[in-house]
Image (tube, rainbow, N blue to C red; front, side, top):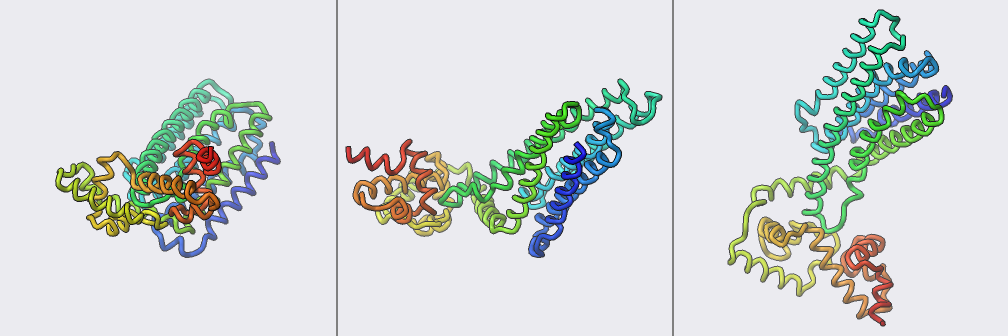
Length: 366
């Protein structure tokens, strides 16, 4: 156990340095910079947690002693990690409750532990009934806090994904990969806390510890890659488009407007304008010759996202090309039909048809 705690101290120290030494361009993005410092606060809390465990041997003393320290430092650590994700998701525009719920839960937990230690009449690190109850209540508070933040993450994540689907013509899941990790990892940590705190079995602790270390490493590493990439800018573009269209979200097209949009779209489809790769929704609206809000409203009436509509059109074109040009490679078909790459084309083709492009060609031959 001592070796694992020492490894944890070294790993968390290195991850803290990684965040500290991120290139300067991160600091010019206020939301990313605040998120970085929150991440660092979380990793520093973990350094102290594992260092104190190593120095004082609290785990060897018993479950109660280790639980007190873990709860005192796991709660602010998860609070900082969760708030960091929210700051990035919302570009720094967070609610009062988002900011301070973690601090409130941490304060209540410390109060419960302090009161229990004071009223039991035993030394601080004694194993008493009062302290056990305080630790269980503190664990419940921790899980409640993490549940709140996870719900906030999921709601915002859906809004971001919808904005991306309404703006880009290809699946942009890779852009929000880090945020998806940020949504998954903190609740996983919270669910592991009862085992890490209360389980006396060394093998269980070792397995949970390895999972915990890997999760934190990927969270920090993915965060660093995310803030240094073009992903934040792409998300901002998509959300800006979404904000502009928000006022027309409930607008229904009149029969005359609907007919005008459909005629313009039919003309555009005849020219196969959808075969251009990287065609954003505003660009497509300009090419079709209708205002952006009309195209957006038309898509809503069809119950389609922009990226889904474009993918359907391109898959239909791919079917035609596969039949007409059996000697074409998947790479050539993907490039002709406007897909970003061969792998993405094959993935979407199988999602839509249930079979691969090669199997589809064989089916048509039969």
